[in-house]
Amino acid sequence: MKKILVLIIPLFLISSCGKLDKKTYVTLSGSLKNSIADTLQILNSKQVVLKNINLDNQSLFSDTLKVPEGYYSIKYDKEQAQIFLKPGFDLSISFTPNDLGESPKFDGQGADENNYLVAKTALNKSIHETVQYDYLGLSEEDYLKSLDSIYNEKLDLLAKYSDKLDEDFVFYEQKGLEFEKGTDLAKFPMMKSYITGDNTFKVSENYPDPYEGINLADPDLLTIPTYSFFIRNYLAEKTNEVIGNNREKDYYMSYIDVIENEVPSPPIKQELAYYIGKRNLIYTKSLDSLYHKIEPLITKQEYASEIKKAYQQLKKIDKGQVSPDFELVNTKNELISLKDHKGKLVYIDVWATWCAPCIKEFPALEGLISEFKDKDISFISICMEDTTERWKKMIVSKNLKGIQLFAEDRNVSFLKHYMVEGIPRFMLIDKDGKIIDSKAMRPSNPKLKEQIEVLL
Image (cartoon, rainbow, N blue to C red; front, side, top):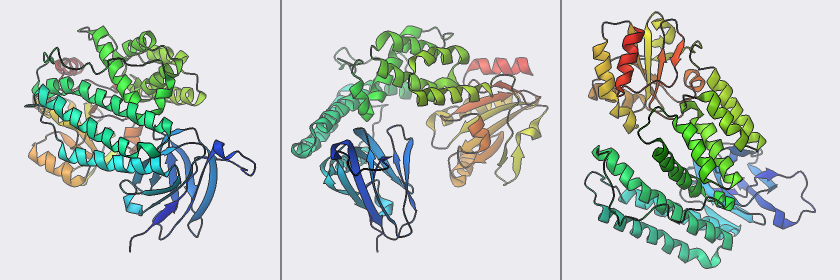
């Protein structure tokens, strides 16, 4: 028998709601039978946990909460679903514990908006499973036809529900689909160039401008999940134009300059600067300068605190600092530590079997391993967030050399210390165990070989 969960969930707990205007909060309550976990989570659009909701010993709960209008997520065990909440909603949700991401059912005020999101998730999954682009042989005309077909299919789904939906929500969804299509339009020339290896590839003069009429002045658009990604892509293209062929320029310093010049809205500037500080501060070669450029754009105290914390952590892995150690297993299940290689230069590659850019670096890395096989340098590859089966299989299929180690997830203290988010990621450590570069050059960069030769 399937386990059924019935929930009505609050976001920001109110200590007393007896005399509150119902239009200022969301009402959610529920019960869970045969639960497999005793906690539910509500997350914001940045995937930050806003509230943990504990179930009592009878798996019951009831609550009310203040909540700004917008998109959130509800998470139960390993399943997660997007939800839309607005003050005045009185919402219940039922689902089986293992099916939250695909088939929850909503009732009450706000149910129509959220049942639409369920249908939209199902449609997106169907499209993802049936539409696979072969960029190598795909023509511009066929790509545009496919995009139009998908966009119209999603508009038709929204139209089917629109008579029952909140007016603001319909606006958000319509604009969200536009931003999504714009992002996909911008993706084609980038992917075509990347897959074919043709850096001179250009779309035709008739190709639609993905960013035509882009609005960087209305902070209300930040409510829409696809908006931030859309404008970040636009600003990235502008930054590439500014940098041109001058690879000596720091990309993220230039990116902040572009934000200040292109974006008139302080709240939008803040969100963009926060994203850079939170996700990309680690990649700059001008840490202090970039941090001090970001600081004035941030007015939210929680944002400022997060970025300051990231900055202080990055200072700990700056050049000359002692590298943290690790103990990870090799293919023979033997524990290998970094200190085992003291006295040698150490080049570390963090990768995964599902990471195409990681795999693309293999030939260059194997070339370096062969080039320096009799020198005092250890090449250590750490596979993370993967399975041991896939890891071992790829080592054999790709005939990978060097020291192959496995880290089950990014919570390994060594990876957390180095703030590993995106991969591939490379580190270079000197013979005394001190950091030379916590974001070292990729194997495919010819300058890495020159650097290693000098250090040896």
